[in-house]
Amino acid sequence: MVNNTQQFQDIISHCKEYGFIFPSSEIYDGLAAVYDYGQMGAQLKKNLRDAWWKFMTQLQENNIVGIDAAIFMHPTTWKASGHVDNFSDPMIDNKDSKKRYRVDHLLEAHADTLSETEGKLLLEEMDNLLLNNNYEGLKKLIEKNKIVCAVSKTCNWTEIRQFNLMFSTKIGSVADDADLIYLRPETAQGIFVNFLNVQKTGRMKIPFGIAQTGKAFRNEIVARQFIFRMREFEQMEMQFFIKPGTQMEWYAYWKAERKKWLEELGIPAEKLRYHNHVKLAHYADAAVDIEFEFPFGWKELEGIHSRTDYDLKQHQEFSRKKIQYFDNDLGPDGKPIGNYTPYVVETSIGLDRLFLTVISLAYREEKWTKEDGTEDSRVVMKIPAALAPVKLAVLPLLKKDGLPELARELLKVCKPHFHCFYEEKDAIGKRYRRMDAIGTPFCVTIDHQTKEDNTVTIRYRDDMRQERIPMSAVKDKILQLIS
Ligand code: GAP
Image (tube, rainbow, N blue to C red; front, side, top):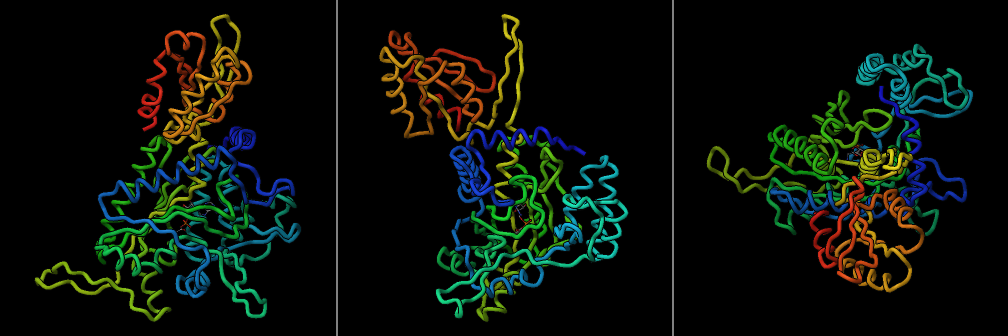
């Protein structure tokens, strides 16, 4: 199986060195599976979120609107949704280290160390056992494969048990009066409980969708693989409300549409694949993952789920409020179809996983021989120009002779339209390398010729090509290249 560990470690170090991602509260030695996005990372993350939001709410032919629901929700929400009773995973503890592992993560990590065929067979066996809730069989599978705890290095395991993944806290100022509430483990429920609010105030007609982006929290037991599996992460979800009976049609539609979007974002088709769920979540009648080939192997990037009418019906029952849609369309008998509980097809992608996808593809270490026979190299982040945190670096060749003033004139023209970076320190080659490392697709150098004929040198990150263009053409050229 693909397991490019060194490259992955290099990406993690690069993210820290250039202000993309830092371990959370690092001065206190960090907090497992929690990360902070730095100055470059926050901008790249925002660009990805904006791209998703634009595609889902602005560019769709179908009616999709966006909301921003609170993280805290009434605790009954999670009883109704099934998360209190069902949002748990089979876990196993190592008796020597007392460390707890999610059984599927333990087996998946072991599969990654095997050959492709052996790994596949192991995962198939695991899927079958999970499907039948056969915990005894799963434990035997762990023992048969001699899977050891990463800390104690022993195979001394407890029985397998279920543990809930939701974080809980108390709300209210007086501890005695406090009520137990949960940090949402998915953003979707904020959409379901607002179904009627949005449908009525927006006069939405089925089929229509509600989208939102926001933080979600899960007490993931195995915290590894950098931002792939975090305890606090961000989801971008859309619930598409449809007529019962049409769910397979819309499921196929969104499955294709979401993969197409990922490809349009610059992810090569051969790095994406579908993986049908064998064991369905408690709310789904069909589910598929879009997997990406991360440096540590094929893993889930996005999920498309046919969630039936489970959630709306559950909220109707627990809230004792009618949550239905009146369909004016005429049925086969020529009369309005009338009231029904809509079915739902959901698309759900982790923003942090999308971030990891983009940077895994962008990171390159390049080496070449120069014309004079000497070797040269660079680390470059080939982030698609439209997503790059900084689009243009404006670099006066020298700190004198009126060059900084000309550079600032250009900055003033460009800044309202896209993110620019200004730097006058160090040799130009060094400045280009720094821009390569953060993925800036275009650099413009102002030199003495600029003073004579108002032209500048534009340097392209990907092939390091340089050309001379009028300074007055820079803004429109960059706008065209990042559109
Ligand atoms: N509302 C459906 C739902 O939450 P999910 O498959 O559990 O479904 C959807 O999660 C997406 O959220 C995943 O495809 C993944 O991209 C992201 N995700 C889930 N758990 C995550 C975690 N611990 N860290 C980072 N991203 C996560």
